[in-house]
Length: 327
Ligand code: PBG
Image 1 (tube, rainbow, N blue to C red):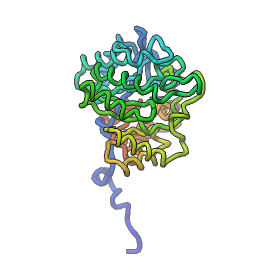
Image 2 (image 1 turned 90 degrees about the vertical axis):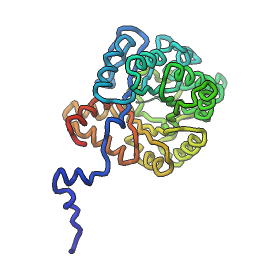
Image 3 (image 1 turned 120 degrees about the horizontal axis):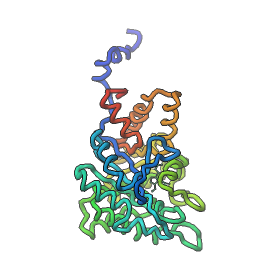
Image 4 (image 1 turned 30 degrees about the horizontal axis):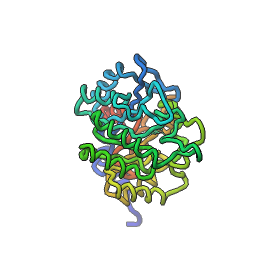
């Protein structure tokens, strides 16, 4: 034999099927939903085709569709009527995501509800914590108690998983302590501890109406040039009690997903963020790329080591899985 015959294992669909290393299952998908406090709204987000801001009274039809398709978990983001400097809406026991969670648990108790513990959707300045007037920067330690309060209100509303995305130092340990003290020691923390300061969040900020009114998030989110920083964040979050680890964004950070997979035994979650969604969605809708690129992108995250994927494509993917397309 003068060379290796790799094509032997690619000779037919069945042959390819039995040697396949990765696949996407509906169990892997987490679907984000934007709930708005104002009534009677179902409005497409201008920068995210096929993604809507939805009022509570329109949420049932949305959840029905999600459950029917076979999605097992959703993450709610809130668009409140009012915002203030200290993000009161985030920890209001009757706040918008708390209410969405209660409704969802009432209608579909098995559907897992994940809530995002952050303040940017609820502060009038759009930052993820409270501002220190002197430095005009987010005050880490003053934000922590408010984030703990937010997480507790979310657990009280029935959230199955708490997902803090605020990037304050110590948020995992403080939230863990707060949850434990209030009888929620059984609620897992899915930490967004590896979150880059990314321009790929642009469309999300339209959807959640959470663009910072001054400055940017670079004093708390990570520098896109860094790799070791991700491993340092992973180390602290594991020590502080994280149960799962999110890497965000996903597609430009597949190396980081692999690093986390190689350095941790926690489930790894890839957040296929809004900008990644919109780029691909538009390219597919314009006919520039075949729809199968969506599955190819998901497989790249699985191959990099992701167990779960938060994606605005979850519904499309369920349909593709049902039709046996590209997977
Ligand atoms: C913060 C949060 C953001 C996203 C999820 N949680 C925005 C930000 O940090 O600016 C972005 C998700 C996406 O782009 O899809 N609460």
